[in-house]
Length: 585
Image (cartoon, rainbow, N blue to C red; front, side, top):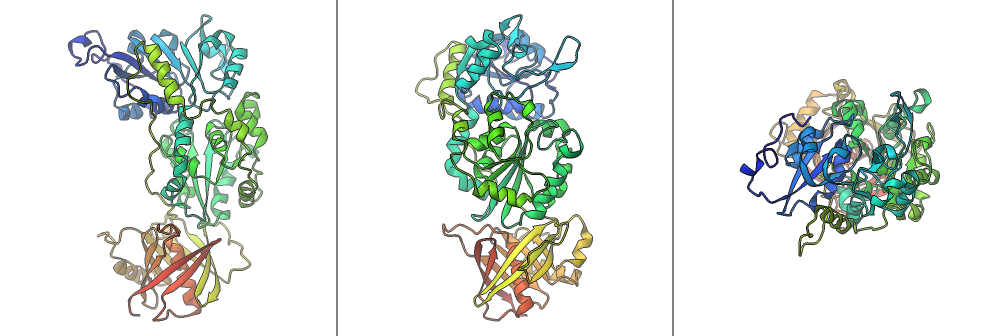
């Protein structure tokens, strides 16, 4: 995992011969798996800038989920001690965000943080026969907190007094080690709430779109799990419904999956399971970076009994529970209370109707009491944790430097780009000015129903997996830079597509978030550009929708020489689209 060769520098038998800063205090970050490492990364900035401190890392190798840990530690750039060396090396402070491994053998003060929103889940532990029978609450029971009847940790970090109450009941011997020091993960979310609109735009979410975040923890009874088989497996129903029921221009969907799903089954396998949904527009959010920004940006979180779902409720987001195994939770925990409060998804009912009810019927104060139990020190965890760490190290905190956590970064721009065939329903609303309503469904298994539609056609991405669909496409679409030397310029690509696919009526080359170049079968080459929104920013509706609207308009009336503007309606949004002729017919 982290290698078997013992380090010689900056720690080791003869390290004093080789180190440059020899008087540093040693702080060891104890990693169990990628999940626990994410919390350690949250608090890393509290120690990283101090010239008096040498940071080290190790992995206990006690977790079943070890894949991904070497890459994460390598990215952190810290010296990594093999676990056996870590146990032999005196340190001033060890910081862990989980239990497991021989933490009691570490030589130094030990602070243990939660890697989620407090302690909520029950986890089976082996009895003296080796069978997993007892199910105490993970992180609060003597099985993890004590060794030979004594607390393992010097400091058991809690975020709220309700956790202290449950700790005192479950393991009174460890209660004296409890320290209330807030929740750094939640504090980073609170700090970033003003940037909600930026995060939405980074995900390609237009102002009139709803962002649905599908969130799952791990284990069979999670939303992503297969339950006990049969009716317990919701995923085969849910994934197709996301594309079949939610119009592509009115909804954006992304998935946030627990690291134990990614690294337990393998990232390639998870992407393979979700391949069809991804081709229909489902975005996959990094298990390390971006999930908090997605929660802030969300209009609805379709989740389960995970900390992610609870964090979403805590910041006031509408929540719809797709799975919630009450028996897996401490009934006195806040997460269990969320299960008794939030609406639950009815499998095989209308997914869109249930999402809309969750959003429209949401009371912003619905989860206020639960939010108050996330932390008793909102916005203050950095100061509280740094003070605790330096007290345990035994040196003063850095003078003149505030304790600060890293700000959540702005994610890269990643809009939906469905490569599955898209079924497009259109309706001519007005002739002057030309106004066309467009409703698009990616990967629709059956013909979508819309009694108001007066036209329908199929749009297919040129890179679709099923290349045979290109021969029957009414619109062929490509996304790329206008000056891409491989396929561009748009005039050349559109002419090539129409020549190759005689059934195709229109080719559309999307060159930006608000524009595309299209060529019609009649030979017209035009650029469609949406007017900016009220803030002056680019309209984020997929420009392929404008191409479909133009095709519907041309079915009723030829493109006039003086045609200058087309209004495209998607849901409740109206997009003013300039029509610029680039060449004569």
